[in-house]
Image (tube, rainbow, N blue to C red):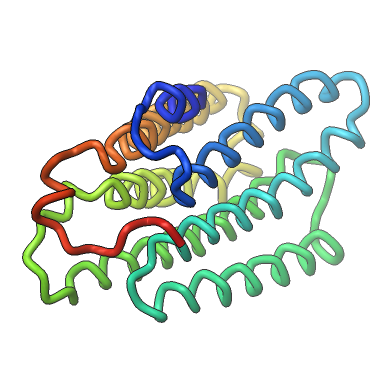
Length: 214
């Protein structure tokens, strides 16, 4: 998760872009979350659980802000806001009425996966419907959304079945390997998206896509 942070500081391009600033904040938040989790897991488990809940909300607020910032139509902008509201409502109801703290609960992460896959599909739909001729892979936001989509889709089912899968200790390595590989790819692609933002001459001369500034 340090890769996107390093890409931000090593990139000599415009660091004031809204897109890049939110990503920087997001990965700093993730880093802080990991430190808190590792420290409190064996010391104060209640703090560990509370941190996970708070991080889930903050994480999705930032990600939906990113999608809103890269949207070129009201469809994705409204989708990000409505999706965030539905996610927050569903997560709150789940935590109040259904959550069980006695096992490794990744169902809330499945809620995230549904929202992120939906927003990613809306973004790709926007790009397909654009009248301009542009190589989509030249856009930094394409790499960011692709990273999010692949990670969300790849982890969706292992999160849903984590309760049952991890009851057998022999499955833990498989779970960690799948999650670890997807996370590395995710971080590399987002780091590349941050690095690429407004550095590629192709973007400055040929693309007419909306700049990621608001």
